Length: 136
Image 1 (cartoon, rainbow, N blue to C red):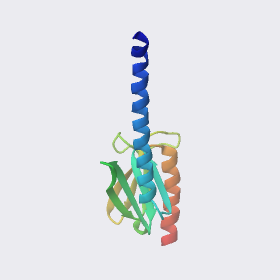
Image 2 (image 1 turned 90 degrees about the vertical axis):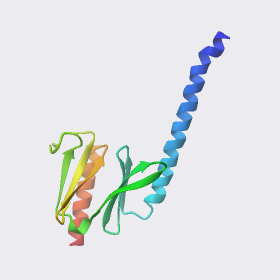
Image 3 (image 1 turned 180 degrees about the vertical axis):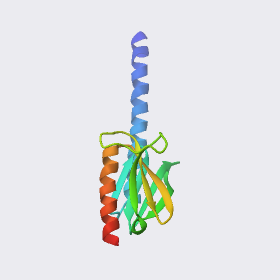
Image 4 (image 1 turned 120 degrees about the vertical axis):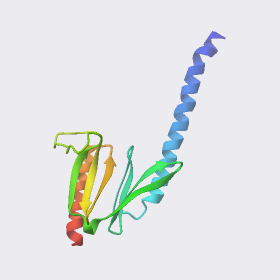
């Protein structure tokens, strides 16, 4: 009897990990469908983003689907800033890592796209600015 009680938490842990893995696989499959045909895409803890047809779209995964959070036309992009995610208007330094956001400025509007990784955000900055220059 005592041996069964010792194995019971392991069984519950296994079931929990299996369910979480299934949910993550479902999220990734939905992302593949959503991002099909895009030029640039990302999926992380902060949400999903893609560049398609000259527009940057970003979404959050809610209730089993991707809910659109915003759209920005790349042709109208004037400036991109790498900002801290939670500390107001503080720009990130080159050494900074972790969660951040890209502030897109252009056409008299500002929009923020969240990222879980500053290195990936820097890569996106370069890609978006090169696309904005090509579209001009």
